[in-house]
Amino acid sequence: MKRIFIVGAGITGAVIARELAENGHKILVMDERPHIAGNCHSERDPLTGVMEHKYGPHIFHTDKKEIWNYTNRFCEMMPYVNRVKAIAGGRVYSLPVNLHTINQLFDKTLSPSEAAEFIKSLARTDIREPSSFEEQALAMVGEKIYMTFFEGYTRKQWGLDPKLLPASILKRLPLRFNYDDNYYAHPYQGIPATGYTEMVRKILEHEGIEVVLGCKFEDHNGKFDHVYYTGPIDRYFGYSEGRLEYRTLKFDTLRVKGDYQGNAVINYCDSDVPFTRITEHKYFAPWEMGSFSSSICYKEYSSQCGHEDEPYYPVRHAGYSDLLNKYIGLAKLQNGVSFVGRLGTYRYIDMDAAIAEALTAARESVSLFNCKQELPSFFIDMH
Image (cartoon, rainbow, N blue to C red; front, side, top):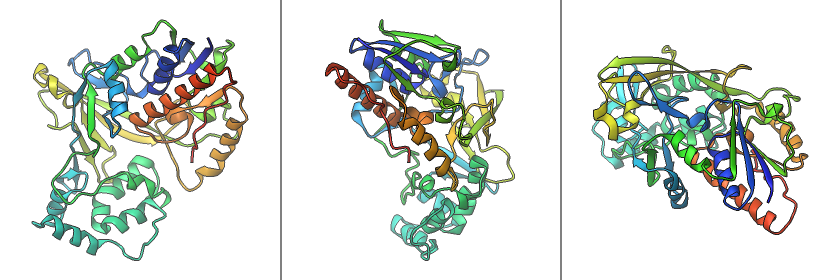
């Protein structure tokens, strides 16, 4: 039996804790927040009764049946399809960019094959190997679609000129030549019926797991056989090399009688609108829609992460690599510490990837423990 210290009670920390506890090890999970589930934390709004996604909406989606089945061990995943709308130039469009969006924007009635040819004619053929977000967009869809839906929104979201952002950000977004407005293409999509916090609570519900909340990992001096760290990697080293750059989110809360916008997510693409989107949270639980006479919404603002702010998204612009490489070098010198999760590896990863990586880390540990081998640090290529 090993004593394991896990810093962070979000999805990554909870899954590692459960897997190790089920194999007979004693686990201490610590989080400085007063609640579990990290940024997935959800709770009932006391005024409206709506289940709030307190740190912004999370929709679970995956193409891996094993990961889908894993979540359903601990909750009932209700079917949910994310259908995003966008307001640009005073008009409402469908996202992701699909055949409806193209016909709306260009006032046409194109068929799928006609639309594909039309977009091909708009794309910048002189950009053969896009090196930035802007070049990737221009090479994919041309200037009008880029300027309408991506340029202003991206500046607000990342606080940077799109010329300075990597092309990989846009490669995540689909382009469709049919009327499919499902934001995700994965076969398994849903939201826990009773919220993410309840799901994480059940993952952590094991006699071998102790959870301590409201306590910083820097203040704990216990002795452990191994540490899994899910916080910001630069914080672990006391920001000795400088601070990595993150974006944070702030929310203005709106409560209204009835409905506010008629959809879960509406993006505001114009740069002169200060917020990026409005989310209406009762629409994330359509199975409860008949239960509420009022609604709660968040206006979402993206900004640079200050010292006291909650880090959300790593900012991987052209100058981040040198600083990150210094922390990667320090991390590789650590004995008995594994850096895992979104902040521990300074990557933007979806929930299904976080679960898959946590399971891999825990199962590799179990295998080594069973062979009575010393556990090396579990390390993911942060590039």
